[in-house]
Amino acid sequence: MSLAEPIKLTSLSTKGGCGCKIGPADLMQVLRSLPPTVPNPDLLVGLDTSDDAGVYRLSDELALVQTVDFFTPIVDDPYSFGQIAAANALSDIYAMGGKPLTVLNIVAFPISVLDKSILADILRGAGDKVKEAGATLVGGHSIDDKEPKFGLAVTGLVHPDKVRTNAAARAGDKLILTKPIGVGILTTSIKKDQLSLEETERLTTVMSTLNKTAAEIMAPYGVHACTDVTGFGLLGHASEMARGSGLGLIIRQEDVPVLPRVRELAEKGFVPGGTKNNYAHLEGQGSILYPEEMDQLSRYILCDAVTSGGLLIAVAPEQSEELLNELKNAGVEAALIGEVTEDHPGQISVI
Ligand code: CO
Ligand code: CO
Ligand code: CO
Image (cartoon, rainbow, N blue to C red; front, side, top):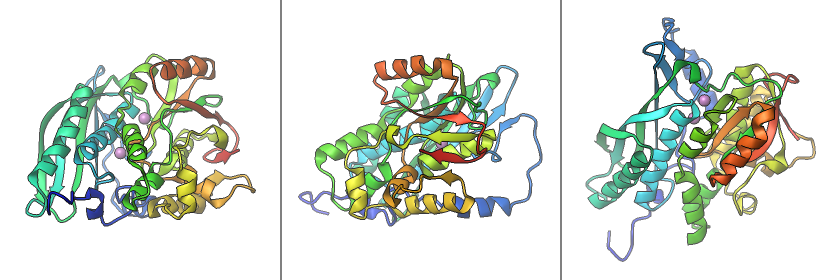
């Protein structure tokens, strides 16, 4: 690799723009085929409700929050890739109301093909985000692999009474989303050289922003449920909240913040396979009630696979305005996108 021709990191990723997540249908099929695990009263959040992280009670005062996330490069700049992968992994701790404590690096890298400085840059980017999160790197594991992959296993702490699951939304709650969507379509567009430097930087900033500020701000509020929007898209993660809570959600399409040019690039055909899978999976479940006149691209955008997305927060209606304002004042790109209802339990009505 000559110096004049810098390596395009995303070209080493064999799959679409969203980091090659195994689709929800395949994943559920595998998980269902496993023998039931022995019930443990200290396992406060396990696999049952498709939540962001596992929560295990150590004492009446303290529980562990554990999660792991890694994926193939979604941007070409190695430092940014490290930042994004770390922000994405840390996010699941924030989505549970926890505070990140320690992290482990997970590394796959073609060490004989790529310059070692690329891996160093990835680790440096992640390290800076871990530091920003106030967490401590305690170790990791690396393998030699044709396709680079990177992520973190993260352990956090939470008070057992303060866990924010995705399964306890209440009827009447307002829904706040803390980052714009459209990330899967834009990262796919990066691979096809469709984004300007400025557009790539804007997208990188969105993805590498920690959900720390949003999580800290929501802590004292009457937040009944929280999850982060990642691989299964806004509607996929919202539908987990609806099913987990046994309630319906209403999402107002025009209020959902979408990154610039997403619609145009979707029209040009840059909708990743993962996004189409998300849409098809939700259709198969009959989870989403779309307005009849809503076109296919608009539906794909709401299902678009996200990397390191924002928090989806269900908050008591009387506190929603104040929470929204506090988030906005702190620079969080938050928006009120809908509400929780007793109607159509387990389903989302898009209006
Ligand atoms: Co999550
Ligand atoms: Co995750
Ligand atoms: Co949560």
